[in-house]
Amino acid sequence: MNPIVFCGPSLRAQDIAPYNGFEFRPPVRQGDLYAATLGGPRAIGVIDGYFDGQPAVLHKEILWALTRGIAVFGASSMGALRAAELHSFGMRGVGGIFEAYRDGELTDDDEVALIHGPPETGYIRLSEPMVNIRATLDQAVAQKVIDMPTGARLAASSKARFYWERTWPGVLADAGDPKMAEELALWLRTGKVDRKREDGLELLKEMDAFIRSGAAQAPPEFHFEWTENWHNAPWRNETASVGAKATPEEDAILDELRLRGDYARLRREALLRLLARSEEAAPDRQAVKHAMGEFRSRRGLMRQADVVAWARENGTDLAGIERMIEDDAVVETLARERDAELHQGMLDRLRELDLYPGYRDSALARQRHPSSLSTPMPRALLAAWFFERQLGCPVPHDIADYAISIGLPGADSFYDLLAHGYALTVRRHALDESGLTDENGLT
Image 1: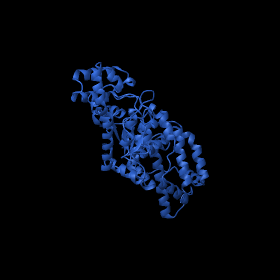
Image 2 (image 1 turned 30 degrees about the vertical axis):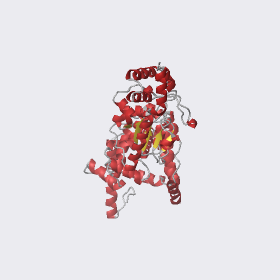
Image 3 (image 1 turned 45 degrees about the vertical axis):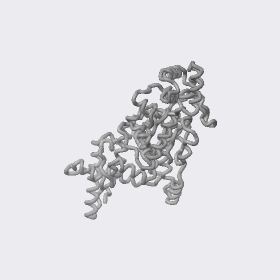
Image 4 (image 1 turned 135 degrees about the vertical axis):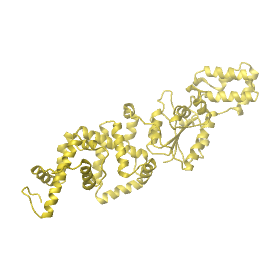
C-alpha cells in the first residue's frame, strides 16, 4: 500500500504533485490514523490535523501504528505536536517546529493553529499561525525592515489574540507608525516566512527517502496496553467491521478453495471468529501473549525478522498476524468460559460428520478396560508419546494451560488420561503381536 500523508493548509497542491506515489488524505482526526493502519502502509505522515470542535488524533493510534511496523512521521502542525510527545516511542519528528516543541522552546498548541476553509477551497487560510508570524518578524528584523523591540512587540500583540484573529492586517494595525506599517506591508509581499510549509516539504522528502531506501521501522520497545477505551472506541469497531476488498490474488485463492472442496469448512471456521468478535470480548493480554508464543514456536519463528518474512510469504503483514492472534485468543477465551455449554454441540457435530459411532465404540472399550501400567510412565515421556507420536506436533511449553484448553481442570487429570490411553495402546499392540482378542473385544 502507498505511503499515506495527512495534510491540508500547510501544503499547496503544487507541493504534493511530485509525490504521485503517496496517498494524500485530509487533516487527520480521531480514528483516521487507525483506519490508515489497516491497509498496512510502510509509512504514515502527519502534517495537519483537526483539534478544535473535532476530536484530535489519539497518541494511542500512533503507538498502535508503530507496533504494526509502520513508520510514522510528524511535522509542521499536529504532526509536530504528536512527534514531540512520542519521539521517544519511535515516532519520527521532522523540521524546526518539531524540534522547538521537543526542546521546550514552544509549549502552546496555538502556535501552529489557524482557521481555514474546507477542502474544496484548497484549505484557504483565514488566519496566520503564530509560528509563521514569529519567523517572519524575525526575518524582518534581520533585514532591518523593523527593529528588534518592534518585532518583539508585534509578536506579543499577535500572541495575545485568539488564534482565529491572527492575521497580517492585524499585525500591521498594531504597528502604530503608519510609515513603518507601510514599509512592512510592502516587504511582506515577498518576505513572509512559512515555517509550516517548509517543515511539511521536509517531511515529504524524508518519507520519500525512507521508502526508496527500503528501510524498515524498528520493533517498538514499549508494550501496547489494550485498554477498555481502546477496545470500545466506536471508530475502531466501525472500521474493523468493514471487510477489506479481496485482491485479485485472494479472489483466485478463494476459487481454489472452492475447487478443492474446502470453502464451506473454512467459511464456517471464519464465522466462528466473526461471532466471537460480536461478543465484544476484549482479548486477554496474557491469552494474546500465549497465543503469539505458540504461533511462533510451532513455526520456528525465533526472530522478529522471521515473523516479518512469514507474513510476507503468506500475503499479510504484522497487523494481519496480530489480528489473527487476537481473534484466536478471543475464540479460545470464550470457548474456555463456556466449555460445558458446548459439549452437546460438539457431540452433534460428530453425528453430523458420521464420526459419532467410531468415537463411541472406542470410548466404551476404554471404559470396559480401565487398564494401568505395572510401572508408572514418567510424565515427560507420556507427553512426548502423546504430542509427538499421536498428534505429530511439539510438546507445548505449558501443559497445565493445554489441559485447561481441552476442558480438563489441570495437568494432573491430563496426565492421568494420558497414562490410561498409553496403557490401552500398549495392550492393543501386545494383542496385535499375539493375534489374540481379549474378552472386551480389543484386538
